[in-house]
Each structure stands twice: as structure tokens, then as C-alpha cells.
Length: 154
Image (tube, rainbow, N blue to C red; front, side, top):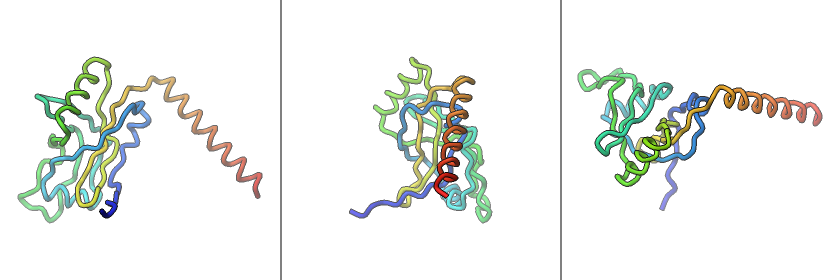
């Protein structure tokens, strides 16, 4: 069996800044043809997207897919609610964790797996301001160490 290629289309960088990602899941996403063509051009934004579970189905809201230029009447609303494709027992397990433990479902990235569009969904817990500051301090310290090592090796 040939190894399927993964081509990342969009990343939600804000997700890693705002949340601790506890677990991640790969989900399919229900799209129309013109939306897929627009995604192939990279015209998608996950910045303010989130997921909800309603009636045993999981939906992504706030994900913006720009209309396809050659799409004419077949273009859909760029901000429409899109259904995610997961097994029912996975959805019910996530539903329990979101309701009881106060987690959020946040889209982390959108990518092609072969010819199919997949969404990486994160089970996330919100960061406090001091957590964000600690992360930034850690990142700065790491960058300074890298620079010092580079200078030393010259």
C-alpha cells in the first residue's frame, strides 16, 4: 500500500497560544466542490474557528473558506457551518469531556491526506495569562540559547 501524502493547507497558530492541546483527532469534513477548489488555492482561515456537538453530530463554526473565483452560482456562504465526520462513539466521548471537564474543541490544522481534506481537531483546555507568559519566556530563553550556541560554534 502506497504511503499517502500529507499536505498542510492551514494552521491555527492561535490555538497553541490560547489553549493547552490535550488530545488531537483526525476528522473528515463535509465540503462542496467549489470549497475544495478554494482550499486547494489555500484560501481558508481557521483563526476564529471552534467546534460544537449537537444531536450527536459535530460541526465546525467560524471557519472561513473564501468563495472560488470561477465558482459562479455554486459558491456557498464562506462562513457556513460545516459537518465533521467522526465515529459516533468518538463524538459521544468528546461530548462527555466537553460537558463535564470544561474542555473546548478547536480546529488545529487543515490538510490533504491523499485527495481528501482532513481537519485535525484538538481537545483543548484554556490557558491563563500567566501560562501564556511562561510559554513566551520559555520560547525566548530557547531562542537565546540557540543564538549563544551558534555564536560559540563560529
